[in-house]
Length: 263
Image 1 (cartoon, rainbow, N blue to C red):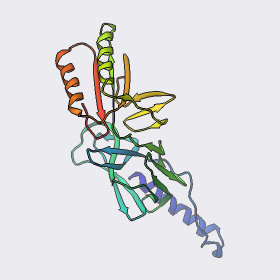
Image 2: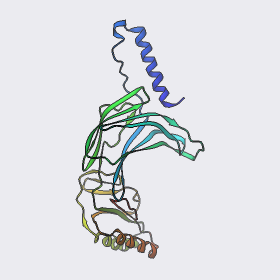
Image 3: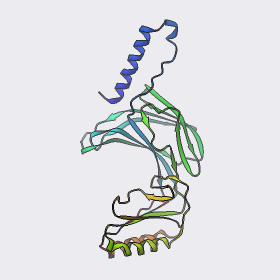
Image 4: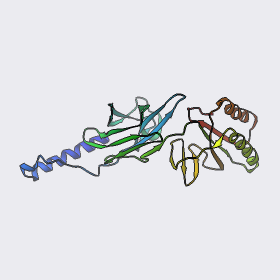
């Protein structure tokens, strides 16, 4: 039986207990169920495009499934100043992609103006969490009054600054240190270093005065950078492509932009 059915049967049991052990006049009092098992992660993500940005909500089951392509059935309703999300169940794929991993679903919220939105996140019809989504010029904040059945790992997602270019240069062998340093210096000449507010931006984090780019190698030497640059991005692309074409050592690099390009 699916995971959410467990919650529904739990509520049936609570109601049955109330009917047997409570006086008739108390049956109209609300029944509050707390400490529901955490079943889903909820994460915010900012999709970057040349002329717009869209907020996305990513759902992920906390428990791994026995295929890599399990989905999540949900219902999404958007009004002028309110969003309602009802998470119904985990859905099995028609054709199993072998492996172990969480079930996933991605919800496109859209390009939002700076505004305060009421937010409801429910697990079926049994549990409803109420809160708010606040959109500002520099961040998205999802703050729920309760988090029954869900976990929101990062309640604040900072927005990627306009006209920013960031990435990393990494190497595994000490013999490539000079090559990596030269490449990093060349990329930094395209713009001035960008000042950041501490926090997590999705594509990178700036914490304790240190820039960490998502997807960078976890071993070897890694140097990250972020600059302010609103010039022709083809110039940066040419530097990246020329380097890859002419160097075969252990140096790797990745460059991203605030308009969605990845080099």
